[in-house]
Amino acid sequence: MNDDGERRPRVIRRYANRKLYDASESRYITLQDVEALVQGGVEVRVVDNRSGEDVTQEELGGAIAHAS
Image 1: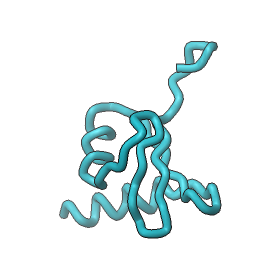
Image 2 (image 1 turned 90 degrees about the vertical axis):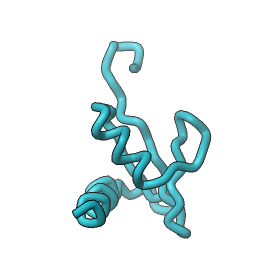
Image 3 (image 1 turned 30 degrees about the horizontal axis):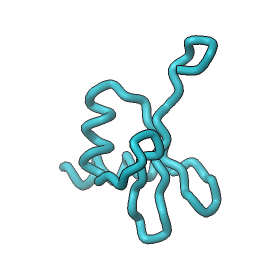
Image 4 (image 1 turned 180 degrees about the vertical axis):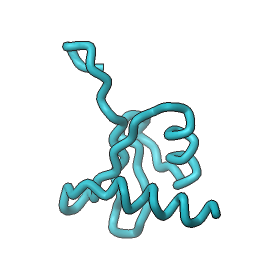
């Protein structure tokens, strides 16, 4: 939450080697961990570490495709 009481999405950084890094917990996580966060109601935002581009849809779409 920020000072205004708004919930901010948890930022996950995606590196060139496709590793995912949870900035709030200072640790690498798996795509399954991201899925669990989303299923638990946590809003996440996945950003490319190099470009800063929001790649949330790409990553979550890949997770959905992988799960089916």
